[in-house]
Image 1 (cartoon, rainbow, N blue to C red):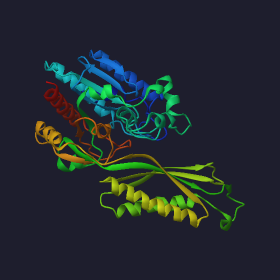
Image 2 (cartoon, one colour):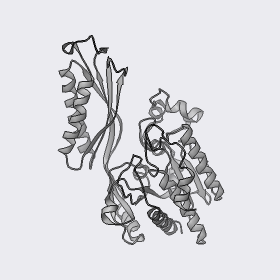
Image 3 (tube, rainbow, N blue to C red):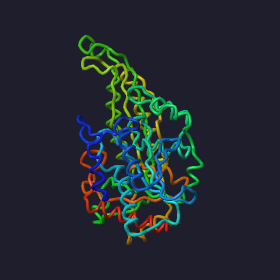
Image 4 (cartoon, rainbow, N blue to C red):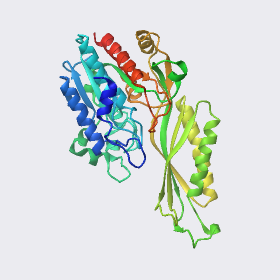
Amino acid sequence: MGAEALLEQIADVGRDRVRGGYSRHVFDGAERELREWFAEQARARGLDVEVDRNANIWAWWGDPGPDAVVTGSHLDSVPGGGAFDGPLGVVSALSAVDALRAGGFAPRRPLALVVFAEEEGGRFGVPCLGSKLLTGAISPDRARALRDPAGVTFGEAMGADAEHVGRDDAALQRIGRFVELHVEQGRGLVDLERPVGVASSILAHGRWRFRFRGRGDHAGSTLLADRSDPMLPASRTVVAARKEAAAVAGARATVGRIAANPGGTNVIPSTVDMWLDARTPEAAGTRGLVAELSALAARFAADEGCRVEVTEESFGAEVGFRPELRDELSGLLSGAPALASGAGHDAGVLAAEVPTGMLFVRNPTGVSHAPEEHAEPDDCEAGVAALAQVLEAWAG
């Protein structure tokens, strides 16, 4: 079955009637429905399905064992995200299995499809949580204690199985090579007029929470001169983030989420939380940018009689995919161009542990993490064909 037809099967799951697009977060109703859908699709193809101790789902073609070829992506989304980020990689993996079987292929090495949990960090704040737990990049205690906006911990949402989360050497040792297909999050392939590309690197990136503390009060009865309003230094920091990032080559800085407490229209907030996403080509540049913004935020807070606390919620150093594997993928795919990624991926986490590559499918809008994210049917099928070609070469 083609990728477009498979995407159509899940097109109504997790639609966000307020934001537009899709909101599918780990262990919520929509994400659980998608997990069951994937398991059903895998079993219908005769694949053996298992869930590891970190809530990642595996579907095996052949007996699980060492030196397996693995492909997959994720099914969760950012709030109000697009239809392709994550699911395209999952449906392409299923469709590639169909294409290989139709051609009479039988793998000589174990072949597995995987769906990683909480890649976007849309519920608990830490991206690539399933792959980070798998590789030990985050501690079990910290993961279990993560809270969603409603105050529910990851451990509570996962249930009794949360006791067993953590690095899984047995699962890692089964992976010989991993390849993730993903919709491109940018316009590189549009400008190159190519339907499929390969990844060369991922920017160093992280998330920080800035909590500005002031004094809550009445919006009408409190004179301007008597206020300690944390919204003012928070606002100045948002503007400064853009200015400071513009001065660093290749940097990005984004504030996509702000929460005022208690959040009343006629209330001066007592605290304002803002979350900064910062990215540059290298770890030192990203940390330097955040340090500069933290110093500015402290100055802005002092100007208003407030204070600020900065907490790192996640960080990933730059990832350079192995050049020999990148070139091998490009050669298999008729010279597919290599592109740097500004977005993080589970493949970037796994790259520290196993030989890892990525394929990108052209996005004509260049837009991602928004309802306008798109990939044309012909390009999706080109991606399936490319993925099937890689799996055949590696598993054959």
